[in-house]
Image (cartoon, rainbow, N blue to C red; front, side, top):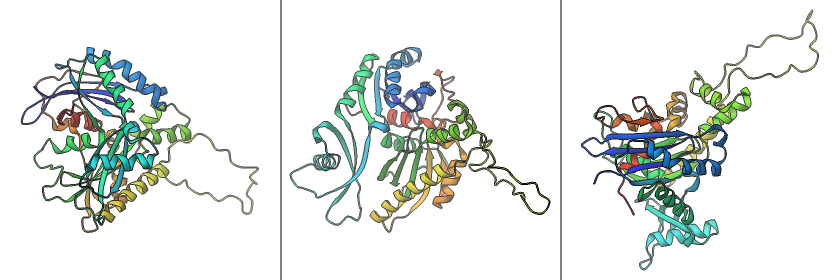
Length: 371
């Protein structure tokens, strides 16, 4: 039957991808619609715009199936670790949903909850579970959007597990992404709106968390410091040679024979952005994730970090994070790991250049359908 096409409602863009099966899957077609600058900050407007645009994007793309899967956007997904006391009579998913509903003060039946048991965690007589939850009415809205685009929904996925599948399912000689011996790796999906942090033991998920800090927050700071538009801020960020400006040379003021300085020196528009603060915040948040994992697995240290996501195109950010975390690093471009059969039909995306932001669509195509 082949792979379904995948749809990702991302903060920075709407992406649609279809792959063909093979020893190494190949790209059939890909389409991308970038989010207008004025909608980046408004989740409601952005999502409505993308949902309305999907039918036209599908029609323009040269896709060869109407079977489709999509991901719940990170901003609509709750990712939370919970510890539960096992029961012989009640399934883990139901126990976890009840615990999560209690923490969020909502009816568990209003949530669609899927769980991953963290095997081997040191939690006494309790089970450590990673819960992924979304509002049932929002999932129904996603299904309706696919149907309105004349697609047949065959799966609803979450971005965490899809991103992991994109690096687990496609092998590349000399560049293994996951370790057969079960050693621990940190996977960072550096997105526009969020950073998804995951720890895997071999291929098994041991930790997951969404950090509300992405490339748009870096751009927000550049806009503030340099008084520019969002598109200009993005170009500045991607072209940076350093994340912090060089210290200004200090000149002596005053002293014998010096003219007095009247009033404060006016502060003008910055010529170079200073991204030290968001980098420090992001590093601290990721360090907290590693500490949580270390508490669960004190004898299983994380050995490396793997970078995915659109912001991982910015080598400076990856290098600084790897340095601050004291981990060896590896970057992944999921599209580069796919085969090509001639010229690939594409709309709004250059599939011949690095596209690390396509991990989630690739992973969804390769994931089992669940509807």
